[in-house]
Length: 95
Length: 136
Image (tube, rainbow over all chains, first blue to last red; front, side):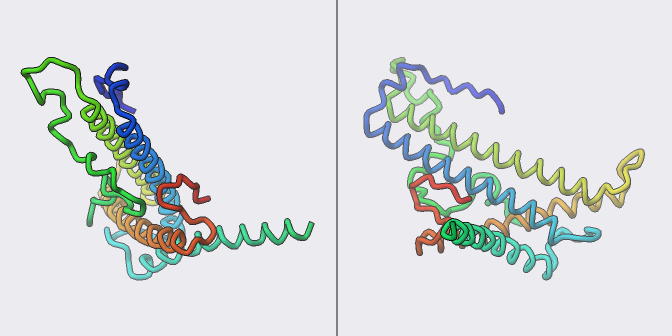
């Protein structure tokens, strides 16, 4: 990652009001959540692209079939998560 | 092809109320008031920090995307590496890249819709806006 020169001193930080500190905290929280979602999107895209785009690539657009495969793939992946968790529950209950 | 989703626009799934500072704000660059050499106010510092954090997030997002495109399209298009990239391979790589962006947009759309729906109904794996819950 690039070193960026923020040019913010310790003193600058102490000058933040409690309200501003809260604002910063909220902002960072939203950013962290956003980053997590984007990471998921990257990983799922890679996985589903490999599943759905097979054969030689000649067009820069998803073919109709590939497009619906991508959409189904994302949805089914999320379903998988639910199924796994549900089954985990029943396994746990069986003990 | 829209690039909006990749660099900055991102998934609009959560409360973006604090994101208005992510666009470059000229007032936070430190030259706002040449007459007063005094230190920046808290709000200036806050803006600077927020802009920097958002910027870094976008950089990371863009890098992740490009590195995935590299990997996936290399695997897809350069099946038998020769002494140089052939015209056909070049064409394949370009098409693959665009197609991957297309695919990313589909994932983003479906995923975001799903997350929003599930966090609304409160089913498993949902994200509550503001709460930093993990999805998986």
